[in-house]
Image (cartoon, rainbow, N blue to C red; front, side, top):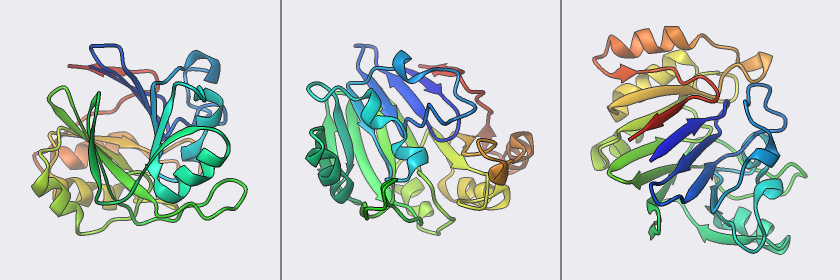
Length: 225
């Protein structure tokens, strides 16, 4: 398995069998992205909510015949009407796909498409793939039920929004890691816009003081297992 960070909240996963998965592929308007939209192909695209910086370039990347877009029901229906293949799930629901298990969990945030359509509840996602469990909380504020997510899932990698303004800041992001207790807490959702500039080194240092490993992934950098 190879996991790659593209900046903001955008990640790519590739399994040992070559299955390509994208999460929140915000690329063309992402000043930190090391890749272009035309560089990316996906068998699956997971979208946590409908905002432009998370739905991103999903419709430009997805092949209408081959790519399956996995998201909450309301957003899935909007995209299906545009001719895309979708899997309409909901928070609390889980399913075993060919690549592994996916479960949608709650996030404290809103959701609307770039043209203003209500897109259902914002979500986070827990993925278990090739022996590792990843928690991508999407855009969210801090909420205490993160502790339940950590208790019910042994999280290996947690991606943590730290930019503030629209999501948790560094202080809340540290508390989130404390609640979830992942093996690694990795900061995301910062520096893409001036409003969400943050210092990831500060986050990493504070999380390590709690006895939790943390690392900074630079855009384009990958983890393999």
